[in-house]
Length: 136
Image (cartoon, rainbow, N blue to C red; front, side, top):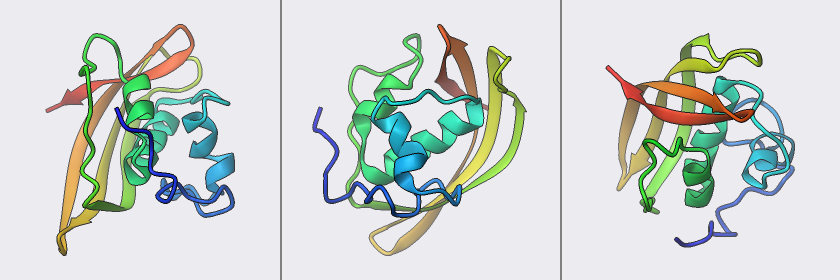
């Protein structure tokens, strides 16, 4: 699996791709570098979106539940991720072991804008939130 493209990785002081309003280095970058854990399912969802945006397939696989994780993951470098909207969350807090995050992610590929709507399930295993799957 190829490492993230350093040219695509934001400067640690650039705005985080997850649009939290925080710097990448203090937000999703900490999780991508394994310096911190996601405290909530929503934080993990945001960090996974940011990983798509910066091309970090390794982080996406690390944050995927082993029951549903593919063996490999190839990201399309022609997709540019534009925005993440969190629609709703259910559970997924620091004291929960399961959570749901509904979101819409916007991207552009070959000049065509697209959006992906998903209701994602997350599970906490040994203190780490992991992406389980998409429902409905």
